[in-house]
Image 1: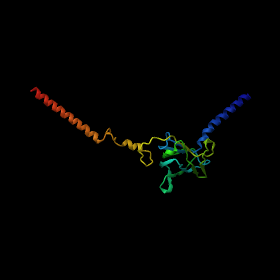
Image 2 (image 1 turned 90 degrees about the vertical axis):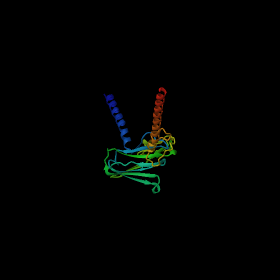
Image 3 (image 1 turned 180 degrees about the horizontal axis):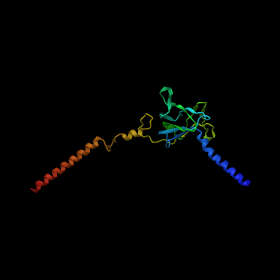
Image 4 (image 1 turned 120 degrees about the vertical axis):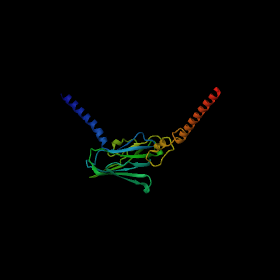
Length: 228
């Protein structure tokens, strides 16, 4: 009987640890890239949280940008005001701060998207984004950066991070505005080799049709004369 009781208790404890692990991991501010981040390429990074500062509602999230980014464009989020701070007033984005119109209670997930361009020299690097979470009472600094080989989960308040992969091939069609839509611009342009659907192709097709009809008429006239 005692053995059964001990076995049951051990099972309950193990189940509790399994449940507690993801709950502890979720009590962070996270940074999730869309797709595979590549040096020299564009991408979206989603910052999210679902907790306050020891249950106190969240009023603002301030995100510092690390070296390794060539451009940052924050997405407007309903219910939040966004402020961008740049180096020397008009240089690279250094900080993006979202301030809530109304404090957000613990248990509600909030997410912010940043469109970024990764620097070419960021290949293989882990970019850490120090975050300060301000609340009605107090604040939490998610700014701890792990040492080489250290597990970020071993830290109390780790900074969210993104691992950048190998460099992408240079397409030469950078639109320079950091919104990541340079490929869309290229796709919308007519093909330069004449294979597109521009007006030149239309006129060439019409000319070929006219020439074919003229040849047909000439052949019919010649055939009638031969019969006579």
